[in-house]
Image (tube, rainbow, N blue to C red; front, side, top):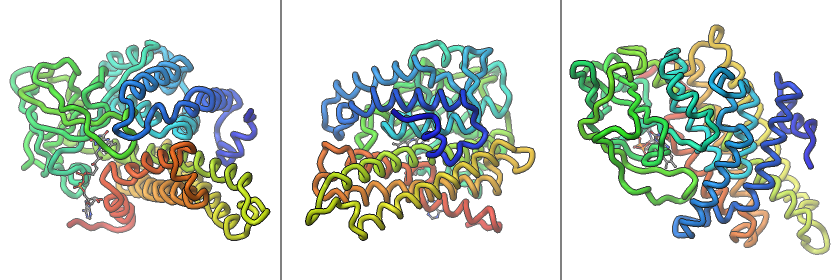
Length: 419
Ligand SMILES: Cc1cc2nc3c(=O)[nH]c(=O)nc-3n(C[C@H](O)[C@H](O)[C@H](O)COP(=O)(O)OP(=O)(O)OC[C@H]3O[C@@H](n4cnc5c(N)ncnc54)[C@H](O)[C@@H]3O)c2cc1C
C-alpha cells in the first residue's frame, strides 16, 4: 500500500500540501486502486462494448467518489464542502485519472462549469449550485462552448466572439437563446446547469460575448443522442445541444458585456491547465504498467527492462512525466496568485496554461504509445488497459482548441499577433 511519503515523492514534494491533504490524496489513490482500476474494462471496452455494463459501472464509481468527498472537495464548508485547496485538488484529479481518465474528466467538469460564477463572485448563483453539488449525490454540469462551425474559433481571443452563432436576445426580464452546440461534456445528462457561451450580437465582438447559465429543465433545450467516439466512451458523454427559444432569467448572465469575454478566456486557460491532470494521471498509470510488465517479461534470459534500449525508453518516460508534472505544478501555483501573475485568460497565464497543456498531452500520448510498444501484442490487448488509456488521452490534445490553438496561445504570451 502506498504511503503518504511515496505520494509526496510522486508529486515532487507536493509543495504547499499539508499532511492532512496527503491523507485525502491517499484515500483517493486507495479508492482508484480498489474500485476503479479493477473495473476499467467494464467502464470502457470501446464504443460498441456493453453500454449497460459501462453505465452501471460508471454510476457505481461516481457514487463512490461522491461518498469519499471528491465532488464537494473544493467547495467551502459553508455549502457543505471540504474546502480542499490548491495542489491537493490537482493531486486528487491525477489520482482519479490514473484509474480512469474519463471519470476524472466528468468529475472536474462539474466545477469547471461553475468557474464563471466563482470568478464573477456571483454568490447568488453559488448559493444555488453549491448545496446541490455538496448534497452527497452524483451530479453533472456542462460547459457549452463548441459549436458546429468550430470550437477553436470560439476560444480564440483574437476572434473576439465574432464567430459565435448561438444568439442571446434580451426580452424584458429574460434572455432568449437560439443556437446549437456540439460535443460539450455532460450534454444531455447535466442536472446542475448548462453554462452556455453565446453572443448578444457577433458584430459587437468581446462586448457581445455572453456566458449564460441555462437550467437543465428549460423549455426549448434538447439534445441529440450521445456521439460515438474513440475513447472516454461512456464516462464522458458528449452530444449536440439545441437551443430553441430557451428563456432564462436576466440574472443568469454571469457578469455582463466585456466582463463575460474575459471570463470565457479564464475558463479556457483554467480548462487547459486542468487537462494536464488527466494527461499526467494516464501517463503515470501507463508508466507503471510498463515498469511492471517489462520487469516480469524476459528476452533472452533477462527482464526486458534491464536491456539498455528499453531502460532508456523507461528513463525518458520518467523524465517526460516529471518535467510535465513540474511544469504543471509551477503554472498552477502562478495561477493561484492572480494579483501577481494576472488572470488565467490574460496573455501571460493563458500562454503558460496552454503550453503546459500542449506538453502534458503530448507526453501522455507518447508514453501510452511507447508503453504499448514495450509490451508488444500484450500492450495491444484489452487485458492490460493500455489501449484504453491510449484511446482516452488522444482527445486531451484535441479539445479546448486543439494542439495548434494551444501553441498559438503559448506564443501570444511572448508577442502580440492576430490572424
Ligand atoms: C470527449 C470530448 C469532450 C469535449 N468536451 C467539451 C466541453 O466540455 N465543452 C465544449 O464546449 N467542447 C467540448 N469538446 C469539443 C472540443 O473542445 C472541440 O472539438 C475542440 O475545441 C476543437 O474544435 P473543433 O472540433 O470544432 O475543431 P476546429 O475548431 O475546427 O479546429 C480544427 C483544427 O484546426 C486547428 N486550429 C484551430 N485554430 C487554428 C488557428 N488559428 N491556426 C491554425 N490551426 C488552428 C485546431 O488545433 C484543430 O487541429 C469536447 C470534445 C470531445 C471529443
